[in-house]
Image 1 (cartoon, one colour):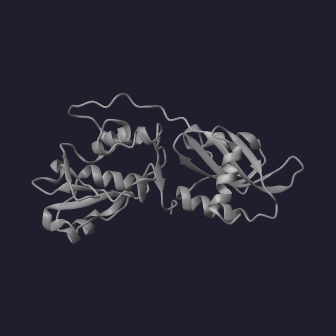
Image 2 (cartoon, rainbow, N blue to C red):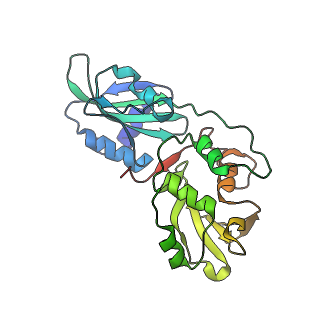
Image 3 (tube, rainbow, N blue to C red):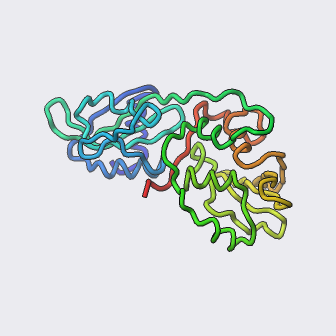
Length: 263
């Protein structure tokens, strides 16, 4: 098990729904785990040394454990669109510990239609849209030091987003910068996120940070402005199929891909 194509073959055999396969006992399960990490980011540990995390529920991949009863030894889980993907080891019916690959359907309740208006907590909306139930990844980040380096305060929604999700990407596509990039500062822009298509998600730095509008610098150098703040912008990109930078056309269910595990 040393190539992504091998993983593709296994996942294809399991199909788009739920399924499980026991692999050869000669396979190093760490090899498969590293391949999946390269594709899906850092996993969540569901079972370690035969002990299931008591906080595991349907929102964090519990469906992956159904095929094993009490025979799971170590299982790691990733969210990917409307699917859970898991690997690790479990005892087969003969009691032999073997590597496994397992998939299960992932259900995330769709939030009510996004609305205009004051007083909406867009970060809570974003948690619901992505099915995020884990603890904050970077609750103790030193914003004082970051803002001193940048010479400016930063939008509160952005800071909450980094504290909550940490390092990674929404739908594995929109990468959240842990500190804004400054190479467009002479043009009045700070870059807070970006995509594989080389679009840059920025703020127009003007007045109070919590009123900075979002500006997308597209891959061809065009600037498109949006009269909304950071978390609202991400919510709309994820769920509005008519948004000019929508991701809703590609995924019905959304998630945040972590690049690093919990420290």
